[in-house]
Length: 427
Image (cartoon, rainbow, N blue to C red):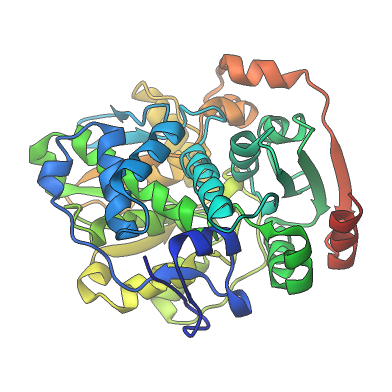
């Protein structure tokens, strides 16, 4: 599989090299130049793990065999991704049934499998993973790599801007997982990670990698659950159904577009943002003008400079038909709360991120269009916010109850690269 650095096209690497490197030269993202066309009708008849093995093996184009890829998926995807009907027109792809109750469990666990392969191929015995989180990435990455020999995980998150329950899932682990509360917003955390990855001497010394959706292994793994969703939809609805993704860093919506590029019969892909509306404004004006990041109820999407946008732009710029299938719209806080209530009245308990997707579809849908909204996290992870909106209690699943009373292990730090570098070298 050949991957090209989108900023420095002279840098071309294999999949396993990209997994180990993470970010390319000049902070460029690695991305394939070509996409396989899949026998979708046959694939949709397969079980989730078997189908996912075929999809990823096709993407890897011989670098990893079907047997190897299926085994990796079998270790990573040990939980379901059910499609649940909310009403006659709208269903929710629930991606929060993994160990940290968020969609990022799929990508993080597959990355853990991929990094083992990459390190073995390079005869590398240790890695330092530095990742930024606006909510769910930190927990998913920490869980996926917790107690894995030879792997150190450092999670940066914006202090006070991640829900307490989200934070408990990665700040209480300890051992090979270290949590740093940055005095700033997610964009500053992400900028620090990029500085680390651009510091070649540091990367060489510590074998630094990132488990954000910067890493191609996480992104490609997410393609698989969109095929799983279509396998669960009634055949008569498939070509009339649009995917609506609550979008912050735009990795998940990029995965949906890749699925369409590979043949999934999707009507269109809608990227729903909160008040951090850089992409919807860009699509209207043609001007890329990120505003200061605003704190919202859907905090995992509080990102003004989405890291995966260059990949999305690459797909859209090189495929006019795909561009016609893509749109983006912003949803404000009032609309988010209204959507949570509307879904609850229809018997479906949601949280702010999926509610953003619901609101976007309600505003954009054609009369004959069905919507598949993406449920990215369990409502209990935002219990305080949801309870305030619906004025009813939200039960905590056992996994959250377990971590609630555990002590946190946190290092506080300014958004300062020199301090972060010293921490990485000292510990």
